Image (cartoon, rainbow, N blue to C red; front, side, top):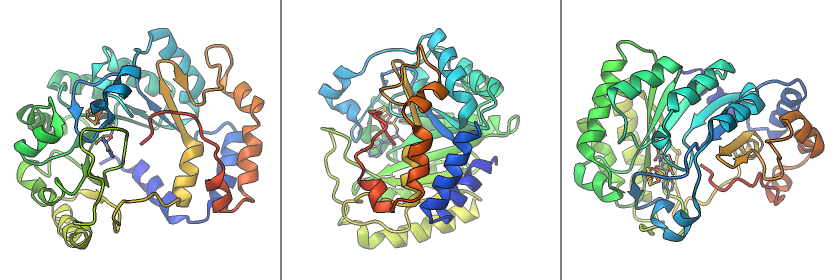
Length: 337
Ligand SMILES: C[S@@+](CC[C@H](N)C(=O)[O-])C[C@H]1O[C@@H](n2cnc3c(N)ncnc32)[C@H](O)[C@@H]1O
Ligand code: SF4
């Protein structure tokens, strides 16, 4: 398993002091080093209609449009890929609808991005497309899952096909013989798909994936599924987590999960979370990094100088976490995970 990026994540969560992190960020920015996490949505559409996702919010879907043009992909790569520690293709929409994904991966590789991952519902993946992506330099597939049984999967991931989905894991297993890459399952849970997680290894072979990440549902608009109250499962969380820890250990799978949950999973601002706002670089057909960034005309250095980015990072070294968290500063991206 390629786990360099996971070591970095671990280190980030271990260092609790945000001042040290902002000092490091400031220096990395000034020295032209890599620190961005570029999250690219090349096409503003999805083939599924998952009940927990804003793709079931008709008004939201109406606003989404556009496909990344080849020349814009080149331009974005040239502007920010050389500053990226990670390139994640697929953030808020479905990347496999884009016609030339291997080319985007190859651009990441060309600019030396150390970790390139694809976040997808996997329904459109085939053995040929998986191999093409790996040959282009992909390091990780992050696969979204909202139900372990066929009934639950197809209920929560509307328009998804369970058999097709399971088959993709067989393809991963096969490709693991020829390529070194990670498969991460990202399971978004709510009170109705939580308990079945205990059966995940009945369906998915431990040889077909490397990381299991479980994350609680968040409110993302007027979605079809609206039950955000986790009260009912709070008392059972630790027990299920212990069971998953045991199973993951047996199968040598890395488990990523909140140590505990509360009723509504209100967001607590950790130092990792504070830093995230300053390293996250959202990119979509018409957007790069910040809505003020005139990226078709100016470059990243000119823009960050224009907005005094270095000073912002530097001043954060001396601010309290509350002060940083309370600043209504936002990078102005619309989709955020
Ligand atoms: C919006 S999807 C976009 C990428 C791709 N279509 C996919 O599903 O992997 C990104 C992630 O959001 C998660 N997600 C969807 N609805 C959510 C919700 N209400 N709360 C938290 N995560 C959610 C999905 O499980 C998925 O892993
Ligand atoms: S979670 Fe992903 S696959 Fe499901 S509807 Fe949303 S964007 Fe599409």
